[in-house]
Length: 278
Image (cartoon, rainbow, N blue to C red; front, side, top):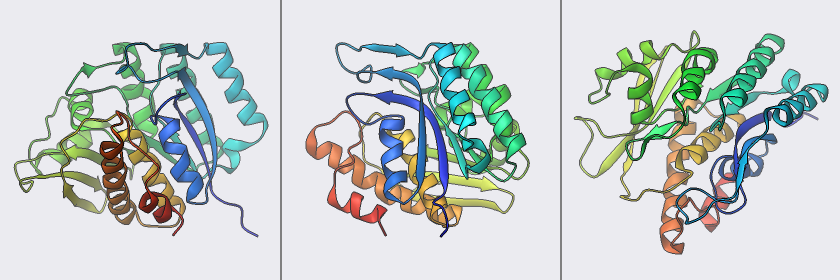
């Protein structure tokens, strides 16, 4: 009997709410994947609340978790590695070294890099040194990158305002050969009013994935989106189809968060959960 595809997911973790691995792991598990979540930080909640407890993982502790994953042979049999928010420079470097070793050991795995570093508001929210590791070490190994418009502009110096801007930005991003750029949450000159788009650019060209814009700012949207794309790919779907399904699910998660009055995406809607099992 075939083993379920394994994903190693290296991201933040929170006690309350759904961001980082606390958003991304559930849809991957529900879709039938095996998930090995490795936290980069553990916080009580996101910064939108009056208080926040917890901390970035001690580098030695984090390195020990990575070592344990390697001792269990996880990189050798992983189908995917996903990386997201990283809270310290030392952990960023350790993550890059881990991905590098995993790719050398298992060239067939797919590495999705979500370069979680900022947004239009509040701007860059990781130290520039961490952003540099993402740009110079993680992204060049990535098969798939999922930046938002702010992150893409920061990383490349190119503001993607029209469809014609995307190929230039993709080239400047410096991804691995044959990789795909998935630019999320784009509002271009060509975008229909009341919509936002996800743009997928790779060796076969450009595809556009518009969706009705819900004017709300929530934590965890990028993390959940990356997890949903990975879940779709793990189920054998083509990348464009995985993106389309992820966008449908994102609408459900955002709508449910609005209904509940949450500040992060919500994973409890019946339609959201049912769709993951299909």
